[in-house]
Length: 323
Image (cartoon, rainbow, N blue to C red):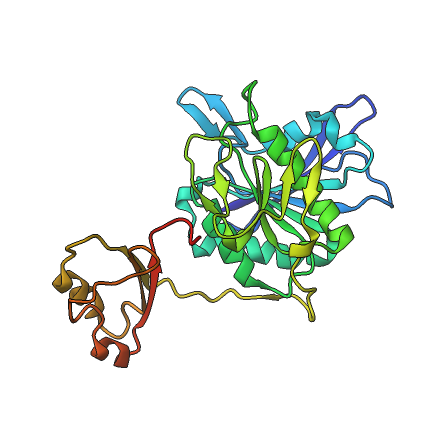
């Protein structure tokens, strides 16, 4: 897909000027769009990766649609980004902008690769995306980015920036602040989800509410920070510091299946899932009841033969909280 490279500068009159270049690259190589407001040598630097989603949408003839460059324009229009203590922010748009429902490990690798390539140039990173698979992406990045020594904050919004009443503005500002401040204090240099009133550990987050501004939660782990009149940062929950250079894991096997089981499920259907050729299914996650209780009076739910065939089983539970 064609890549558009736009470099923005703020003129003295406040207007935005841009220069453009083109190149041929696939999705995940980004259109470089630095949104630097008033750079200074002492300011920290944050790279914002706009992959799509509700936050940067605009109203068009067919309703809300992704709008390349719109999020960057809004950042220029927000005076908060020029306040003292705010970092220098560079914005890069993925091409094309995607709904998070269209995300797959291919897109996760593209995001991780961009962070890897820009790792030494920035103090922190913000990933803006849709909310439907945001928790999946955050969890994947948490395991893909080994020895991460800088914050990667994943955020989005339930309502777009173009609406008068929106959660997008607050989520965006909070994510950028966390990406800048956390790295400075050596706290929570990890992948986090910033949404609503909380900063959550990325691999512990999940979307619990579809129509609530507090869409995400971490049912089995406390928030790393809460946002109120004051920001309460739980520094005691910080992970140990990285002991080596950043390692980005990009090879993933998608031949897995998650099955939510209901009372009276058909054993034969489960057996047929397991009887895949060697190049087929590699892992099966079974979501049982309660704390992971499986039926005790039914034989053959997990056959020894499948274990010998190196099919990996993992059982989970359907309850959102363990406690």
